[in-house]
Amino acid sequence: MISRRSVRNILKGLVAAALCCATPYVSPQELIANRDAGVESLTRNEARLYFTMRLKNWPNGTLVKVFVLPDNNPLHIRFSNEVLGLYPYQLRRVWDRQIFSGTGQAPTTVSSEQEMLERVAKTPGAIGYADGPIDHSNIRLLEVR
Image (tube, rainbow, N blue to C red):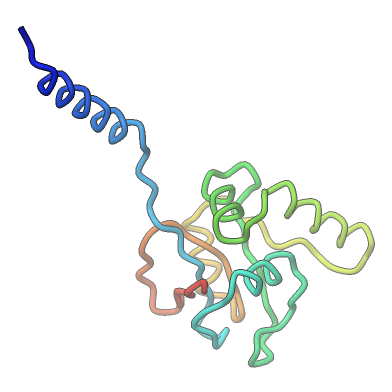
Protein backbone atom coordinates (compact mmCIF):
# COMPACT_ATOMS: atom_id res chain seq x y z
CA MET A 1 0.00 0.00 0.00
CA ILE A 2 1.23 3.50 -0.87
CA SER A 3 1.58 5.92 2.00
CA ARG A 4 -0.07 9.30 2.06
CA ARG A 5 3.30 10.99 1.99
CA SER A 6 4.26 9.15 -1.22
CA VAL A 7 0.98 10.09 -2.90
CA ARG A 8 1.44 13.71 -1.86
CA ASN A 9 5.00 13.78 -3.24
CA ILE A 10 3.89 12.19 -6.51
CA LEU A 11 1.10 14.76 -6.88
CA LYS A 12 3.48 17.63 -6.14
CA GLY A 13 5.85 16.32 -8.80
CA LEU A 14 3.07 16.01 -11.36
CA VAL A 15 1.81 19.53 -10.67
CA ALA A 16 5.34 20.94 -10.93
CA ALA A 17 5.93 19.09 -14.21
CA ALA A 18 2.61 20.31 -15.61
CA LEU A 19 3.40 23.91 -14.70
CA CYS A 20 6.86 23.74 -16.24
CA CYS A 21 5.54 22.25 -19.46
CA ALA A 22 2.50 24.52 -19.68
CA THR A 23 4.39 27.78 -19.21
CA PRO A 24 5.82 28.90 -22.55
CA TYR A 25 9.28 30.41 -22.57
CA VAL A 26 9.07 34.12 -23.14
CA SER A 27 12.30 35.90 -23.82
CA PRO A 28 12.63 39.41 -22.47
CA GLN A 29 11.48 42.24 -24.67
CA GLU A 30 13.82 45.11 -25.26
CA LEU A 31 12.93 48.71 -25.90
CA ILE A 32 15.48 49.87 -28.45
CA ALA A 33 16.52 53.17 -29.98
CA ASN A 34 19.06 54.48 -32.42
CA ARG A 35 22.22 55.69 -30.64
CA ASP A 36 21.47 59.26 -31.82
CA ALA A 37 18.38 59.42 -29.59
CA GLY A 38 20.59 60.39 -26.67
CA VAL A 39 18.65 58.62 -23.92
CA GLU A 40 19.43 55.51 -21.88
CA SER A 41 16.12 54.97 -20.11
CA LEU A 42 12.46 55.95 -20.28
CA THR A 43 9.60 55.80 -17.84
CA ARG A 44 6.63 53.70 -18.88
CA ASN A 45 4.69 56.92 -19.40
CA GLU A 46 7.40 58.38 -21.67
CA ALA A 47 7.47 55.16 -23.71
CA ARG A 48 3.68 55.35 -24.05
CA LEU A 49 3.90 58.99 -25.18
CA TYR A 50 6.49 58.16 -27.85
CA PHE A 51 4.56 55.13 -29.14
CA THR A 52 1.25 57.03 -29.22
CA MET A 53 3.07 59.71 -31.25
CA ARG A 54 2.42 62.43 -28.66
CA LEU A 55 6.11 63.18 -28.06
CA LYS A 56 7.71 64.04 -31.37
CA ASN A 57 11.28 64.91 -30.33
CA TRP A 58 13.95 63.38 -28.11
CA PRO A 59 15.35 65.57 -25.31
CA ASN A 60 18.33 66.43 -27.56
CA GLY A 61 15.96 67.76 -30.26
CA THR A 62 16.25 64.81 -32.67
CA LEU A 63 12.97 63.95 -34.38
CA VAL A 64 11.46 60.65 -33.16
CA LYS A 65 10.73 57.95 -35.75
CA VAL A 66 8.63 55.09 -34.34
CA PHE A 67 8.75 51.57 -35.79
CA VAL A 68 6.24 48.86 -34.84
CA LEU A 69 5.35 45.33 -35.90
CA PRO A 70 1.87 44.50 -37.29
CA ASP A 71 -1.02 44.62 -34.80
CA ASN A 72 -1.45 40.83 -34.79
CA ASN A 73 2.24 40.04 -34.19
CA PRO A 74 2.70 38.23 -30.83
CA LEU A 75 5.70 40.41 -29.91
CA HIS A 76 3.70 43.59 -30.64
CA ILE A 77 0.83 42.34 -28.49
CA ARG A 78 3.16 41.48 -25.59
CA PHE A 79 5.08 44.75 -25.90
CA SER A 80 1.89 46.81 -25.98
CA ASN A 81 0.48 45.05 -22.93
CA GLU A 82 3.58 44.64 -20.77
CA VAL A 83 5.63 47.75 -21.55
CA LEU A 84 3.05 50.33 -22.62
CA GLY A 85 0.12 49.04 -20.57
CA LEU A 86 -2.17 49.22 -23.62
CA TYR A 87 -3.85 46.76 -25.95
CA PRO A 88 -2.88 46.89 -29.64
CA TYR A 89 -6.41 48.00 -30.60
CA GLN A 90 -6.03 50.99 -28.23
CA LEU A 91 -2.79 52.00 -29.93
CA ARG A 92 -4.40 51.60 -33.34
CA ARG A 93 -7.34 53.76 -32.24
CA VAL A 94 -4.98 56.56 -31.12
CA TRP A 95 -3.04 56.42 -34.40
CA ASP A 96 -6.22 56.34 -36.52
CA ARG A 97 -7.66 59.32 -34.64
CA GLN A 98 -4.49 61.32 -35.31
CA ILE A 99 -4.47 60.39 -38.99
CA PHE A 100 -8.15 61.16 -39.60
CA SER A 101 -8.04 64.43 -37.64
CA GLY A 102 -4.92 65.54 -39.51
CA THR A 103 -2.97 66.08 -36.30
CA GLY A 104 -0.39 63.33 -36.72
CA GLN A 105 0.77 60.15 -38.39
CA ALA A 106 0.90 56.49 -37.55
CA PRO A 107 4.26 54.87 -36.88
CA THR A 108 6.03 52.94 -39.62
CA THR A 109 5.01 49.27 -39.61
CA VAL A 110 7.79 46.80 -40.40
CA SER A 111 7.20 43.21 -41.43
CA SER A 112 9.68 41.43 -39.15
CA GLU A 113 11.85 41.82 -36.11
CA GLN A 114 14.94 41.71 -38.33
CA GLU A 115 13.62 44.61 -40.39
CA MET A 116 12.86 46.45 -37.13
CA LEU A 117 16.51 46.10 -36.05
CA GLU A 118 17.80 47.24 -39.45
CA ARG A 119 15.51 50.27 -39.64
CA VAL A 120 16.17 51.39 -36.04
CA ALA A 121 19.92 51.03 -36.61
CA LYS A 122 19.85 53.11 -39.82
CA THR A 123 17.34 55.81 -38.84
CA PRO A 124 18.49 58.66 -36.58
CA GLY A 125 16.05 59.16 -33.69
CA ALA A 126 14.35 55.80 -34.25
CA ILE A 127 12.64 53.82 -31.49
CA GLY A 128 11.24 50.29 -31.57
CA TYR A 129 11.30 47.00 -29.71
CA ALA A 130 12.75 43.54 -30.12
CA ASP A 131 12.81 40.15 -28.45
CA GLY A 132 15.79 39.08 -26.42
CA PRO A 133 19.34 40.39 -26.35
CA ILE A 134 20.42 42.80 -29.07
CA ASP A 135 23.98 42.94 -30.33
CA HIS A 136 24.23 45.89 -32.70
CA SER A 137 26.64 48.80 -32.41
CA ASN A 138 24.13 51.42 -33.61
CA ILE A 139 21.26 50.33 -31.35
CA ARG A 140 20.93 51.32 -27.71
CA LEU A 141 18.86 49.25 -25.27
CA LEU A 142 16.58 51.49 -23.24
CA GLU A 143 15.73 50.67 -19.66
CA VAL A 144 12.05 51.11 -18.81
CA ARG A 145 11.77 52.58 -15.31
